[in-house]
Each structure stands twice: as structure tokens, then as C-alpha cells.
Amino acid sequence: MAITLLFVGLFNADLALSEKGFYGMSFLLVLFGAVAVQKNVRDLALFDAGHPALDDLDVGRPAPSSDGEAVLEGEAFRGGSF
Image 1 (cartoon, rainbow, N blue to C red):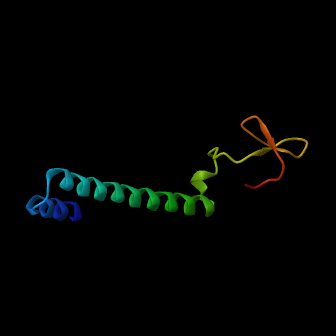
Image 2 (cartoon, rainbow, N blue to C red; image 1 turned 120 degrees about the horizontal axis):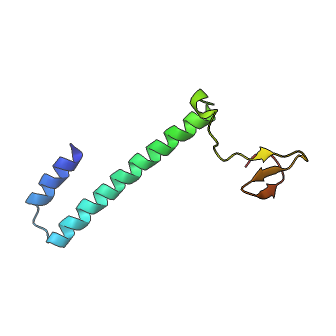
Image 3 (cartoon, helix red, strand yellow; image 1 turned 180 degrees about the vertical axis):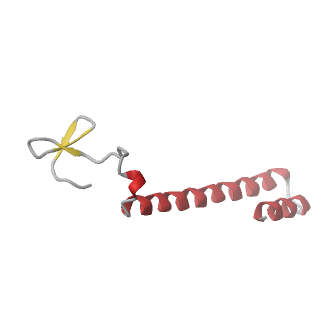
């Protein structure tokens, strides 16, 4: 609905076409950013809650080796958490 109202408002505005395009694209980019942040927050909350569906996935946590070092992508790290 907000996109429709913005489109109608820009259509009726006495602005240059380049200004209308700037405002329209700015709004769409902000909308995309808000959705992306919401999805990332949701996914992180799901991950932190220990969702059972995520137990079988390799999510990039370092796997401990036999000598106590955590190995991630072929490099050794000391400690267990990032």
C-alpha cells in the first residue's frame, strides 16, 4: 500500500522526472534494507535459540581438532567462540 501511495504522490507532484526517480528509488532501497534487517534478526534469533532444524546444518562453527584447536576453513584458531 505504501508503494502505491508513493507512486500516486510522485505522479501528481510537480517535480522533475529525475527527482521523482530519485525519491522512488530511495524509498525502494530503504524498504529493501528494512526487510533484509528483519530477516537477519529473525534468522539470528532462530539460530541462537538452537532450533532443531539447524542442528544438522554446517553453519560455519569451528570443529575442534584432536589437539584442542578449532579449525575453520583450513586455518587454526585458539578458543572456541567468535
